[in-house]
Length: 84
Image 1 (cartoon, rainbow, N blue to C red):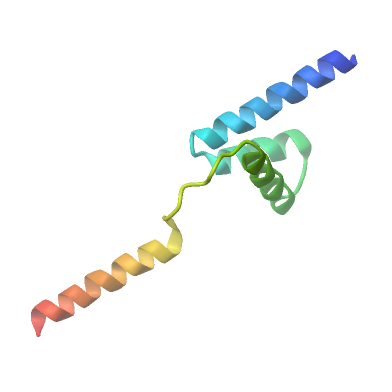
Image 2 (image 1 turned 180 degrees about the horizontal axis):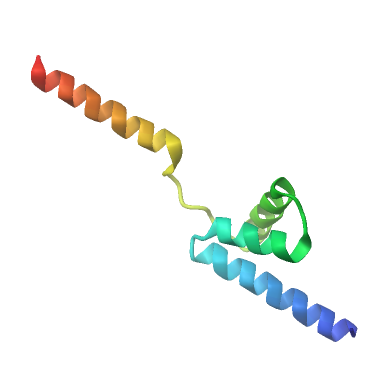
């Protein structure tokens, strides 16, 4: 494989990772990175986050377990308040 082919493949690979990140598909980007590189989960996550940082892609805030827990606690508090 020539250097031009290798550089073109890396550029295509990076473009695919960036496209996934811009679509909000961080897990997909990590999976793609792992498939291509054979890296472990932690290394792939760190690498994808670095690619995102270098390209000014910010992960959406919110979501996750903390948000779900907060919603459940709020609903429980409202339920208790209405029954008292």
